Image 1 (cartoon, rainbow, N blue to C red):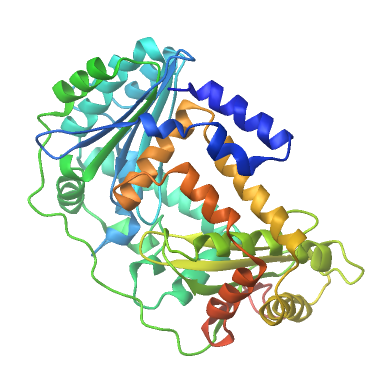
Image 2: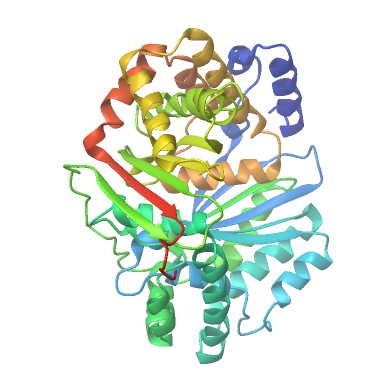
Length: 449
């Protein structure tokens, strides 16, 4: 097997030479050597052994996100915090202290679909990490004290990331407007009233349901012996409970039948414009064409939105982007524009919509599409260069698809996108009647925010 370092060097040389298309033929996908082990309790273990560098990344992917919340929003993210509060045999924050004292890095994240915990450490400390993670998954303390403490932390986080941030306000309102029925409409951080009211009983039920062995994927990449490490994981996690049922929200979003608009009025130096169109879920055959469309519109200084709206003679924006945002059950094509102070938000919206209509009427030229394709190829290849990146790809792909999409397959899909494909997906998804528009503007004269 080629080492991760060898693959990264090969990728770098190909990118420098402008020959990313040859990567699939000249270097193997590191994940071709990944091994899959399923424990008796249903826990899936993904291992990728490589001894090029004395580090290892250990990640636990819990297949639960804000879209799985039923009665109270924000619980999935709340547990990301509570997992650091301490367990039966470890006081609060000691887990992190042990990792950092050994030169490691520890963190976690929550999305609409999944919660991830990870440690990147010198490989000799991997057995300690396995024991630490098993300890908190098996013996997490969920009581009034830990809930009260982390509740305040999350409420504070909601305040500075959303309520005190105009961009956060814009995105929250956009999701709540674009999705009427699907739980993607709820913020990952949760609504304030839910965070204030959720109790210990609800938290324990959530943990028992979703933090079960058959809802976990452990991904490990780097310097270790596979057989030994799997044995350690089996010994540490083999007794973890298995859930009889893992409920999922059955709601599907109905088709949008007309444009939706809303305005958020808060103290803001300059207006913010956001828009969204419904798009397919991750893994869809149109995904690569939508990614290339994103690159054509806002992939750097030479992209259409930047040339027109940010750097052009008639520029009205400080920044402008159009990005395909893919989730497990649905997607959005998201647009965001930061308006220049003193400029008109109406002019900015007209410019943005004009660029969308332009690409719907006429396919972009080959040079634009080629730049966007190359940027995507480089992103895929450079992501193969570290244990952390590989463990992340393993966990994300397995959680989303139950398999690893081969790198060669993904590169080929990107390279096969044509200018007409870009126009086709713009025509298919970026329709006026499916558009949701949210404006963030200062209060009107005499109003208070």
